[in-house]
Amino acid sequence: MDHKKKTRVTIHDLARQLNTTASTVSRALQGHPRISQAMKDAVIDLATKLNYQPNFIASSLRKGHRNTIGIVIPRIDRNFFASVIGGIEDVSSEAGYNVIICQSHDSEEKEKVIVDTLINGKVDGLLVSLASGTTNIDHFRQTISKGVPLIFFDRTSPLLETSRVEIDDFMGAHMAVSHLIEHGCKRIAHLSGPLNVTIYQNRFKGYKAALEDHDIDFLEELHIQNCITREAGSEATNQLLQLNIDGVFSASDYSALGLMETLINSKIRIPDDIAVVGFANEPYATMIMPTLSSVDQHSREVGQSAARLFLEEIQSPGILGVAKQIMLSPELIIRDSSKKSK
Image (cartoon, rainbow, N blue to C red; front, side, top):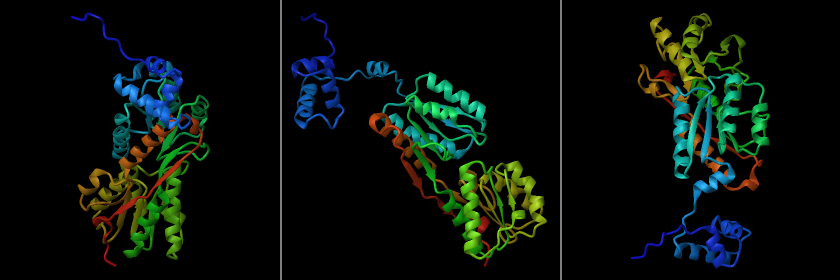
């Protein structure tokens, strides 16, 4: 019986037999463009013959990597962000990466602490949706300066040249408001989010543009800011009822829900008296009566796209710093809350 201990074939063993360097073998295995096809074929043939298995753990330790992605989101109790995380995991787990999920609770200070903790923990990259309270982005500049891939999704910053995945919020809002107008609405209120956040800026711009395109004047009194929660939507209802509105476009399904509940309790008919369209297509949109028309953001695709951008950057360090933008088109889902008779 052969009692000799079986040893793992290393990259150095391949290099010795091919009379080349370990770095050349490593690059050949990764398909590096500077390595000739003949060398790549020779390396792959020998690796297959000797049953070479790469030591990913050792490789990660040498590079200071943990095969972990840090995800920073405002809140996890939103279906949009939960679905984005699912999309990220679809792609990242297949590539051998785990994720760490952190909530900023829309606080800039908490976001700074989270980012610092994740970077010190040697995550391989950050996928971030900004807190609504974030105005200073120096913590992300430090992330980039340390060579850590940074991908923004949904809530992004125009002040940083970094890769991002966004939904065309302007288009989504324009479609929603145009739909209300086409169903006879002429005095359409807008429940907007905080306008320091890019996505809410763009939804507000889409609302105004749709009015202009249909020769309807924008009225400041019909615009209620910082209204993206269920409670805020409910509180805004009495104010709106004094303004003789016949339609509402809400930048959030949550404020749309609060609005609709209060309208129904006030014996206001939806959509006959006031038609409503939300944004995000939360699961409850199909469970309430009437069902809520809303703009779908294709959240899982957002997550998948963000993860793919990360993998591109981590696998091709030479392109780090070259910002890529993916803009996804939203979809208006029409339900009972906006089907007003013309």
